[in-house]
Image 1 (cartoon, rainbow, N blue to C red):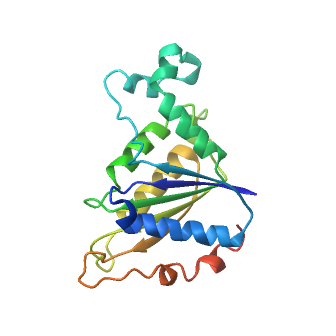
Image 2: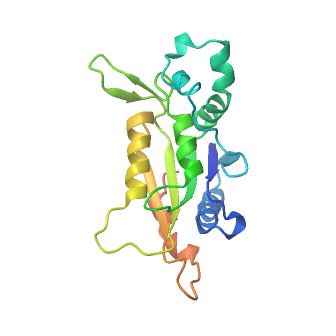
Length: 202
């Protein structure tokens, strides 16, 4: 039985295409069965705190040095780490903002990624991720369309963060583009037409 963590990061609510696409992915997973629990983390309604001059030092402490203040300043960070640890599958929806991910999603990542927690260093000072064996689905929505041959900044960035700082290497992206075009109609079934065949092992 699988546990799913569903991350919503668009401020557009029910009108958000990334939210709708991530929900369509979630529905595909539910249709396959074998789902034990779904945890929803809405980063707009429950915004992650931003690091400040006080809290930033806690993120670079080794866990053995945590004290009572650390527990208070890292309460949100500890909560979302626990959610990710518990999840077998993570579904993340994000719009494209200036070639990057949404602001709340970046803040969530900054709270999640911590030395000694999501990654450690080996004897050669190589990073070793501590959250291996999970599957991440990215649901990415953009108002325009990518030019042929242009880099996929969103997928590359998120895949690198999860791989380098968490040890999660299985990251799959589904995109919906051109949402600002006149008369645009979302076709999630077409976008996810190969979902079942690609994910038979889930």
